[in-house]
Length: 151
Image 1 (tube, rainbow, N blue to C red):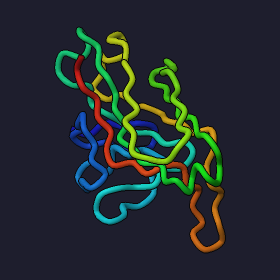
Image 2 (image 1 turned 180 degrees about the vertical axis):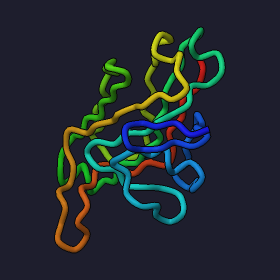
Image 3 (image 1 turned 90 degrees about the horizontal axis):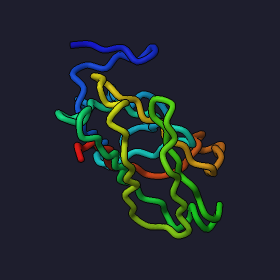
């Protein structure tokens, strides 16, 4: 099975994306940097993942969970950072992080947008570290996994 999301092809979509799993990297549509330490990726200000809704989600709704880490140095440089997300034109409530640490951003997804084979979720931070000459990447947060689960 091959599905197209814009100009991005998604083969055999899954509901859980571990950044370390090369077989699902094609579901990281945009805004993810290369895999580091075989377990995580930096994101840019905006990043998009395409997730397969799990069985029954169109009847019960679902939750999306983004597992992330914000280094203390990010907060020291930028101050509080706010993460927001949208899917299928629906805004999900934002969350503000005022100190570094490991977090799980979890939000409900309405069942009426889950009757699809692939659901794009767009995440966005209000602040990022701008690219420096040595690295060249815009850096927001470190992500280890993203998951869509039935309620």
